Length: 143
Image (cartoon, rainbow, N blue to C red; front, side, top):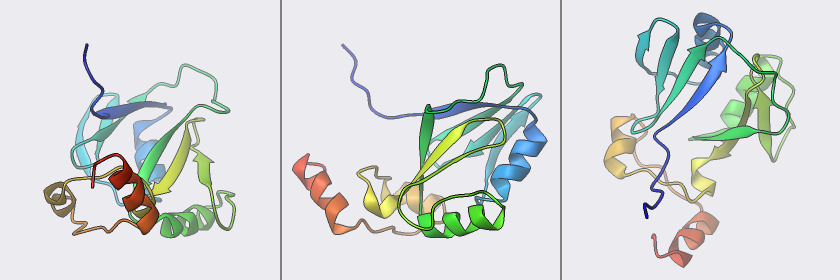
């Protein structure tokens, strides 16, 4: 039986690739991995997000995917600056214009970890974990 190792990519349906790149580009520092007709691929180092043009389903209410960022509070500010209503503190989740729900977590607070060389290749240097996240990793024998 195979063991799950990680996630290679997440695929999102959007109405327009150009509009999706503009929307996500107003929130995140994007690196485009590639683009073909009807699709764009956003680089996350050793992972990626595939944007696919042509939304075929209704907006989701609860289904979501989680992104890890280097600074959750900076993103909260960018969301608010773009007129997206989010709480002033705590949990951070928002819908994109096509009904994809995005949950945001800070790298320092979660067990998710990138190899140092991947972080450096992404221009992120060395991101440190907070004590609670390190404790969770140690409890699993991962730190």
